[in-house]
Image (cartoon, rainbow, N blue to C red; front, side):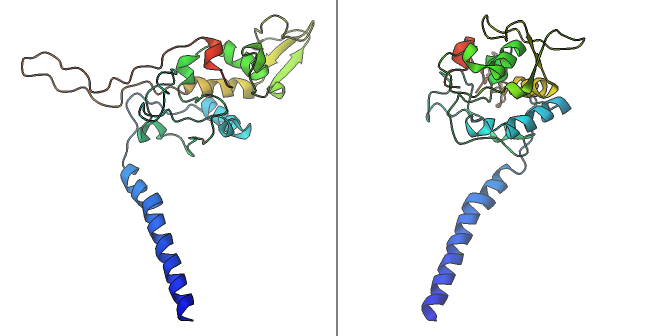
Length: 223
């Protein structure tokens, strides 16, 4: 009986230490973090798009957490600065992800701002990246004989549109693209240093430059 009590006590202590280290301390560190000035709340359409992003499993293949340069070449890839807790102020739940079958998408709204590109890429990724392994999402689109008023017709590369038909984005596809375009964390996260004694402005501690724009194919590489 004594051994069982020791075993149970040891398990409870271990669980308590793990909970304190992995849950309590991180919560204390970030509970008072405020949203940066450059971060805007999601619109209703972007929130619907975010729900579609989750429902379609995008989080299983894409992260939203560019790493610091000491951990990987994410900045050199054009994915932007390392994210900070405030960048996720409006993300409930957060979509950090744990797999990079495709590229990190945190700043895809900066790297690839084109709505037409995103719509076409969702309809048929290989029309833009020939070796892409990303699945296509044809159910987010309607195939019609002709456009109706208000339709968003896809501008697909030659040979990818159905013969004698047009492809029209559904409201869900448009909302998903709005969410992707909203993924922009290129604003500064640290204030500039005070002016030097001479009156000349000192360089900023971290200007958090915008991710380097890359060609469409490169932005979706490995997608």
